[in-house]
Structure formats: C-alpha cells, structure tokens
Length: 101
Image 1 (cartoon, helix red, strand yellow):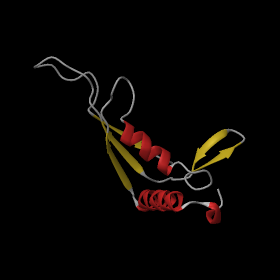
Image 2 (tube, one colour; image 1 turned 60 degrees about the vertical axis):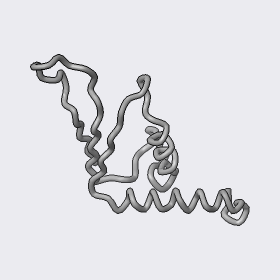
Image 3 (cartoon, rainbow, N blue to C red; image 1 turned 30 degrees about the vertical axis):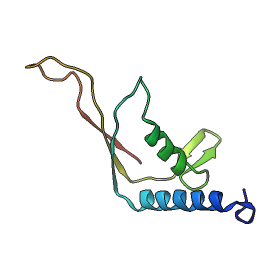
Image 4 (spheres, rainbow, N blue to C red; image 1 turned 90 degrees about the horizontal axis):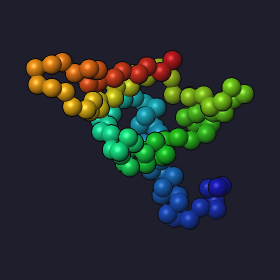
C-alpha cells in the first residue's frame, strides 16, 4: 500500500518493521533461541519472520524462485533437541549454524 494511503496504525507497523529489517541488515551474526511447539515455531518468531520478510528488501522473486538478499551473515539457532537418556550423549547437536552466502 502506498505510504500516503496508510492509516496511522499501518504507518506505525511499517516503521517497526523497517527498524527490525535495519537491525537485521546491520547484524553480522544472528542468534535465535527457538523451542519447537507441536512441530512448529513459536508465534513470536513467526511474527518476526513476517515482519522482516519484504519483497525487494530482504528477498526477491527470480525465475528460479525466491532468493534471499541478506547475505554474508551467520545464523545460530539454539533449539531443544528432545529428550535423551542420562549418561548418553544427545543424538544431534544442541546448536545449529546456518551460513548465508
């Protein structure tokens, strides 16, 4: 929606989203603490993803599909890995690292 047609509430939301995007663009490293709820992500994380996902800013559509525009960042995701028995190592790492190209 063009800026001049936005309500005050919409303009405030866009300003908040702009601030979140700017924060992410300025970051070299992103750390997310993400529990899994019923095989999905928590609502606050989904809201954050919705706020920062903006066509032509954080991603673009190409002939091969969507392409990320926030490159050169390292993302660490700390997530619970489920239960494991005492005295035995977990079956997978507790922290995952994802690099953007």
